[in-house]
Length: 105
Image (cartoon, rainbow, N blue to C red; front, side, top):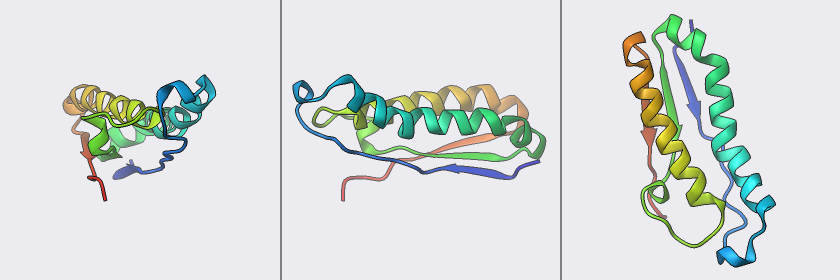
């Protein structure tokens, strides 16, 4: 089994007023920050369950409150929701799901 998985990849740019963004800007950020973590986690869940391992997802304080437009806050809200849901699903298998929420620095 697998003891642990840390999803820490992330991109922030572009950030600016929402009206300056196009859909590709959102897709690019979501692809790395949200869907990348989800895809890797889903692929490794069988091993994590076997090892009663841990999933650590890096989110952000901006996964709780929104700042300027762009996909960053959206992607971090997504990772928060995914982590909460996964935690409930994996509880019965002994897999722990943890979120790190670094602040603004």
